[in-house]
Image (cartoon, rainbow, N blue to C red; front, side, top):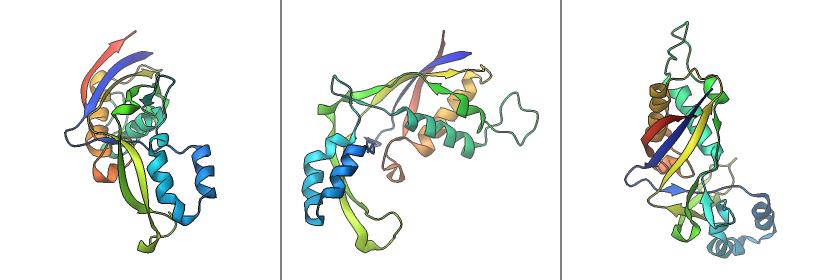
Length: 191
């Protein structure tokens, strides 16, 4: 088993946008009339971020994990222990565990960011666009730990996957706009 401490920070011009589905928000939204949605968005945008008791916005582990898994799929990095050139880290990285729930910054540092989004995901008609406002942090950095339970991944391979994921995939919402992109500041093995 190996544990790595990783520090990442946003690429210049790549803020992170938070949009976490929460049951209570979904239920509130269902009760609104169409003409009330924009006002609700203006008042409740910060609630779309997950916060701890100190008011710090948390970076979802699922975002980090998803970024690493997608990087393994699309980078096609061949593990050093592979017995075939067709093997990739895609299945292996699913065993990695993000050990902590890192915090990005206090919620007061976030600002409202809005855009028109597809109001009905099953429809691509332009008439179904609705205005959504989400929390955005322009400059961010975060530290977290990853545990490799089998200890087979080399530090340089993990770094390569994270760099690829940070450059090509990103984390958070609005990734299609190149938001949530990051660089790897450091990776060190800790135990």
